[in-house]
Image (cartoon, rainbow, N blue to C red; front, side, top):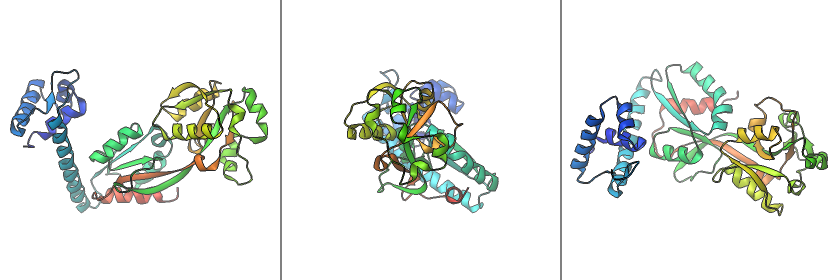
Amino acid sequence: MFQGMRYVYEVYKEMSFSKAARNLYISQPSLSAAVKKAEQEAGFPIFDRSTSPIRLTEPGREYIRAVEMILDVENGFQNYVNDLNELRTGSISIGGTNLFVSFLLPPILSRFTARYPAVDIRLTEASTEELTEKLFSGQLDLMIDNSSMDPSIYESNFVCEEHLVLTVPKTFSSAARAAAFSLTAQDIRKGRHLKEETAPVPLDFFQEDPFLFLKSGNDTRSRAEHLCRDARFTPHIRLKLDQQITAYNLSSYGMGISFTGDILINRVPVNENLVFFKLRHREAARSVHFYYKRNRYLSRAVQAFLTCASAPS
């Protein structure tokens, strides 16, 4: 029943026969015939071809779930075979959002590839929601994120702690009113925002200002909303963005106030157009972890990567 599953799965990923055919280096008629044969063997249509783009039928969704379980088992066995070669071969699939792929992964990847140059690293940059789906289905071995993942499904390795601070354009009059609480980028790099004696800023100083929020579903967005609710005001949101770095850059041009993690501030060039403010600790602190699926075979390559990631830089 699952002989043509790779053809079906490629069509499912692309939701297009033409794109899937290009990826598989076969003609579209050949791919269509292979999928038709798989549907005949299964005894039901897997795809609803009456819509554009095509979509899965109800039994088709169950077929894909079964395929993903089969591929997960195959990947686990392939990892076992690779382990017999003592890391001379193998691969690791890692996913992360733009922030972590850009600023946390590079030094870890550099250390790992220097030690294990033959291991193939595959990086996926996407939203947390998309990455979680890929991790669950077995398309990723590891996912780096600051979200809280279900511990009954995923295990985790701690990477670091991140602290959100308020990023305010210097030109805003509110920045001057809150000057007693202000911090520079150099202060953030020295960890002044983490010290007990550094007071958090009352957010109501900024209630009349425009804000730059990330889109709904993002952890930074949820924490920002919670902080504003606690300060008893509804922020005026000028823009809703995908990436923290975009909000930060727009803040530097006076577009609005943003919530920024110290991971980013510690790694980008100092921007003299901005001032920073410590936020209330409970909502401002969060942990970054590598997540992997519980009960899935962890290859030696993945184990070595996690060891490398936890080593001091």
